[in-house]
Length: 232
Ligand SMILES: *[C@@H]1O[C@H](CO)[C@@H](O)[C@H](O)[C@H]1NC(C)=O
Ligand SMILES: [Cu+2]
Image (cartoon, rainbow, N blue to C red):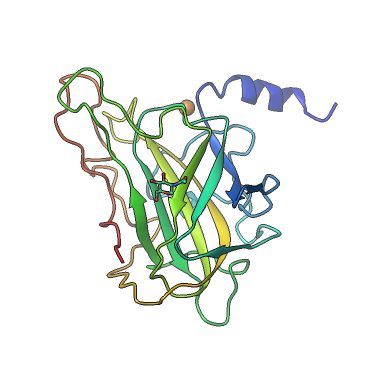
């Protein structure tokens, strides 16, 4: 058979872990790892737990191995990521983009350095009660709108979900992420991306949204880590 015993055991142990494997655009679903760079957790679905790890960039299995396709999208439209199998833990969902520097392509760009800006984040409802809810909970696909005012060109689109169920101690937060390669047209080019951040670099292990006690005492606020969301 195709899968080795160790892979099956790893899969069995994966429990509620997850990974972002493919894109959906205008109803068309890519193959797994066709527009999304292959991640180290493709079998285990396990998280990054060290926010200083180089895996924070795109979680690439072998950095320097691009996805075979770059997805063409229109500014202002939505891109979805397929979640294998679903967002199985509570926490915030975010999307970041990095513009590919001149002379490179979405396939060649490694995403390193201060190149990332945040285009979306969500947060919980029910803070201060014992039924805090996260919008991405249980989702098998997650969507983001590409800003209509963005500059045209090639980008890396990075999806990130931070699981907070064991985040009270340092290193307990679980970060799940992938990068898609996209090419944007139709943008007005007026977006001010402000100051850019790096991955790793944007987060500290002690950020209040990373080291976070989700259950008791009942939290009354949550600060999503990283920069503010850019707006058109
Ligand atoms: C498009 O993405 C936004 C998040 O940026 C989301 O709120 C909205 O529901 C999505 N729309 C669709 C049709 O998926
Ligand atoms: Cu898990």
